[in-house]
Image 1 (cartoon, rainbow, N blue to C red):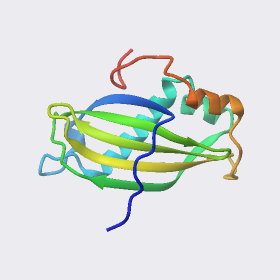
Image 2 (image 1 turned 90 degrees about the vertical axis):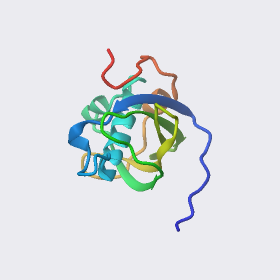
Image 3 (image 1 turned 60 degrees about the horizontal axis):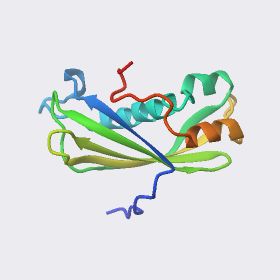
Length: 154
C-alpha cells in the first residue's frame, strides 16, 4: 500500500455537483474509474472559471497547466444517475507549480467515493517550465467571483 500524506488545509475550495451519466458507467452500472479522473479535470476547470482564471484565458496567454503527479484512492462506487459533490481544494501555489486535493462524495448519503490529489506545472507552449504571473496566482487564491452549484449552472 502506498503511503498518502494527510490532507492539507485548503487555500481555496470549490464544490461542484455532478451526475453520473449513462455514458460514464461500465457494464456493472458503476462509474468507470477513468471517468473519476475526468471529473477531477472538470472540477479544476470549474474551480478556475469561478475565479476568472479560466484555462482558456491562461492558454490564450501562453500559460499551460500540465499534470505532473496524480494519486487516487477509490473508496465506494458511484452508480448511474447518482449525484455527487466534488470538493476541489487548492492546497499549494508555488512559483511554477500548484497542487489540488479532491473529495468526491455521494449526495444521497455523504459517503466518500474517491479521494485524490494532483500536482501541476506551469509551462509555455514549447513545454518549458515557467513562473506563474502574480496576477494569475492572485486569481487562483481569490474567493469565488461566480457562485454555481454545478458545472452547468448559469
